Each structure stands twice: as C-alpha cells, then as structure tokens.
Length: 90
Image 1 (cartoon, one colour):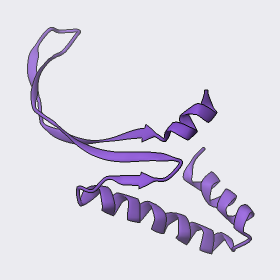
Image 2 (tube, helix red, strand yellow):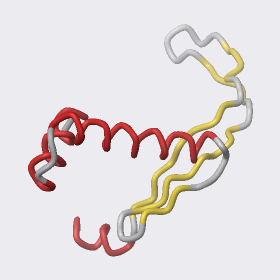
Image 3 (tube, rainbow, N blue to C red):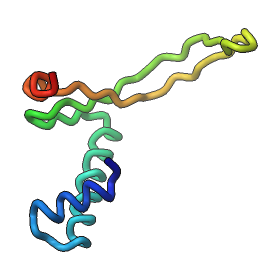
C-alpha cells in the first residue's frame, strides 16, 4: 500500500473529497514527523509506538573487500506494535 492508496481509503471511508483526504493524510504524516524530529515518542493507542533511537558510531567492514570503515552515529525510527494488534496479526 502506498500513500495514494491511503488517501483513496480515507476518501472512501469518510466521504470527503479527494483534495481534503490528501490534505488530511499529509497533515497527519507531518504531525508524526514533527513529533519524532522533536525527540518525542509517538504512541497511537491500539496501534503501536513510534520511537526515535540514537545509534552510536561503530566499526564496520565491507563484507566483499574486507575493508574496515567507521559507521557514523545516527538516529533511527523503530516501531513496536501494540499488544492487541500483534495478537490480531498472529
């Protein structure tokens, strides 16, 4: 499923126009991005937790050439599904 499919589903489920559904979807995604960029976690009840984690720099190795290099520190987003949702999927 891609963003266009989400917009179409929002439009069909709510009965709003295509433009309004696209605006609503974009606004929701923007709020989610801003929340995570600010360093806060995002908990959606009965869905899951989006969490921003800091990864430290570490040594790495190219598996083909065996050349060692440094993997820089970075921030990653992790998702932990809610227990009720996990149980539904399994």
